[in-house]
Length: 251
Image 1 (cartoon, helix red, strand yellow):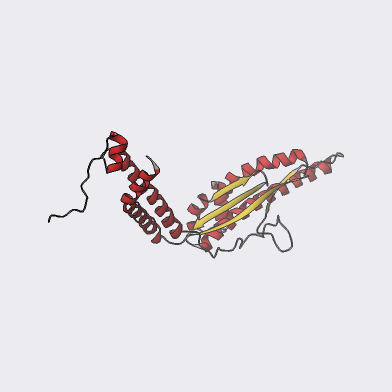
Image 2 (tube, helix red, strand yellow):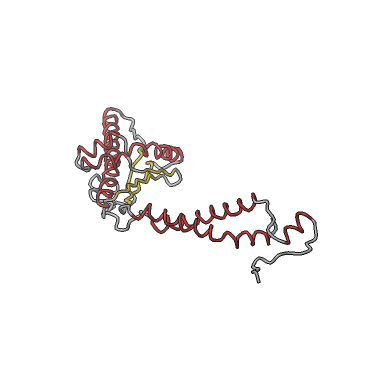
């Protein structure tokens, strides 16, 4: 169709587009307006190698990926529950915690979304604390094994370490690997991240408008009737001898 034909189609069907946009926007708004507010709490754990050379740095990247599923596996959740970091009602939320690892900066992000900001922060802090404590226990065990070997042999041994630290919940003293640094961290979020009523309504308006436009253009493309003088001349290639005005009245 030519541009002027498109304009004519839009002039006839603008109300369809507007109606579809309003209906879709209203549906989007109503689908979110009744939902309770949700809050997201998150924290980041970093994995570093000691000594920090190229080989162990690459090993750190692989360990970062291995740490992600450990954060909310049954052993970690049960350990947090046994130590009192989690309450019994927090367990399902802990299992569904969202995690994301980044090989580039060697970090693992833990995030929990819930209608209770205090509970969301408590679950995130508990999972982070268990990961840090487990790593600290592993490092202590490695250090003790090295000490025993060194006391029995003249050849000193040092086993390289992979250390899990907190980027967001460090103690004031800077003791990143301290086991008691995460009892109340992170703090509960104060700003809700959902439901996104305005964004959903706006997306509905845009989507509804696009669908309405498609309906109007599709209907126009399927309509092969002649709408006026221009259509007769363009498609039939015949001259128009006379035409009857649309608004005529009987005398």
